[in-house]
Length: 372
Image 1 (tube, helix red, strand yellow):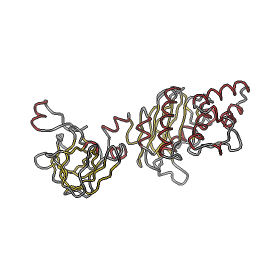
Image 2 (image 1 turned 180 degrees about the vertical axis):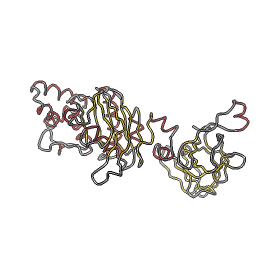
Image 3 (image 1 turned 120 degrees about the vertical axis):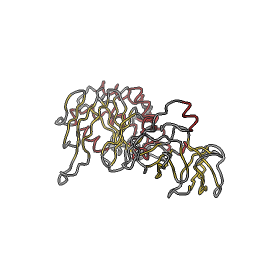
Image 4 (image 1 turned 90 degrees about the horizontal axis):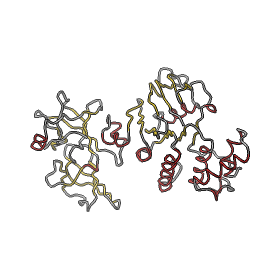
């Protein structure tokens, strides 16, 4: 296995020299690490993966694998295996032949090919499928074959380009478990591209969040969830999405969201115009809660419900996750944020940390808490 390092990597296309698709991308994927590149469509995540694979030329910067610069190394010489969204299987070949194809091209002895394919098929629980052809397989089975074809080559790292996007929701969940199990079993370096932040949160050791202006934040899944660096990451990471609304600091230094006064201690020099973020799961029913509004809609999902609460002074309803019986539509309802779970951003969308409290006694008497 191997580490992968990117330094100042950028990409432009002919006729767009002044417009970078990706600019100054730099981070290191450690040996054996599972890193997910996540972001909306068009942010350049698949382009970045293809540059690592050597399928796209880089316009600036340097890519190294196991400490060796590979900018000019052809894809076949990089020791990587890529799993595509479209499976890219040969319909006229059996599953065995599809998995063995790369080894056959490399002129590996037949006995070794047979042993390797059978070992991979056992790992992926598809020994009974080896004689079938791709048209006879389900989507999940085809994806297993594509993954098996990558594993059998024993690459230095695996690259996944949205491998689950063609599967239905239930099968996606099953395959996420399979890929996570595979990573634990192989201990392999894996780079995984997706637009689905649920996949990113459940699979990654670290997440690289890409946006229209490049890399937004890099970190462990729960670090991005707890401390998003900016409004873009705050709104992208988490399901359901974080509530984001305009807020202000009044003359007394109190954070206000509409008419509500929220528990947050501003640092010195904080601007008066802010964006306030509270995750739906961090708002709780409270008869003395700071936020009051009218229930517009209740979405019942079984174990939990999503309550849409319209608050005076806000243009958009707040969403609240409720585990127990939700209020009825049209009811007046009060909620409050969980202590330490109010996120605040400046006018440029950058995170502002709450001022540190001097001691617990002050915190208790003032009813204030640090931002999460």
